[in-house]
Length: 358
Ligand code: M6R
Image: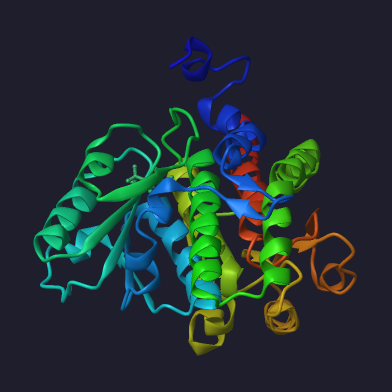
């Protein structure tokens, strides 16, 4: 480990440093694995166990907190690309109940530290029952990495900040590569789409860099809402877990109430909470759900909620329904969560600074 990796390097906080490190940590995660020109992904842990993975009856993803949110994104991606049923479990629930685990099941364990007790015990139990364990871990040589039959490290470097940021985007990078590799071997993805997604993954570090360059815009937006007592984060599809992640991060950093919700579920009760004092953050990037999420924005506006939206460059509809918007570069919907989470991480930190210093 290099000394610089565990120092703040001129940043005021580790979390800020780690958010800004993401172009290079994602690049490190992809480096030596993904080659968009030749159309190859090299991951020994996947290659050596490809039969086990493509023939899995189902995949269970076991994790906690932010890592669980990465698992939720992976559920959508793996089911879409690989056509294998996926279940995502909180390790803390899985370990105490009596789950049905069969021999053909694959468990993907996701953990930054590789030491989370609930995840570790859940895996031990699943392993005893004959499951194949694939670890997606950041900390090299950690307990979860050692317990796994195979795995892939995220190579995000030491994450010192308690709030997980760069580890999350590293997890998404590994899980996307894994899904693409399985889909290719299984024949459930067209070659054209496979090559497109490879190229898009390769472009992520540059796009994250572009987002970080506009950090000042998020500071200005955060200042406007510094007196809020609650926040609501809404998303659909691949961005639903990102809404959960936004709410978790805000609670963890700022000690105020925040809730993440699937945007379409609001009408089934929680919309009653919306009034002019509630900022509602929409993760509304251009994807197959976009038209639907626009109608959810209309529902919030009708109740006078304050809409802040994370949108795709060039979207002309969402700004007409939003009090504030922040644009991110265009990406396929499978890749978009790796981008849309970044402005949320920054917004939350900026909001915390504004609140504490005013
Ligand atoms: O090290 P792990 O990924 O296993 O940790 C799991 C959670 O405790 C962790 O992701 C937590 O939710 C984050 N610190 C939230 O920012």
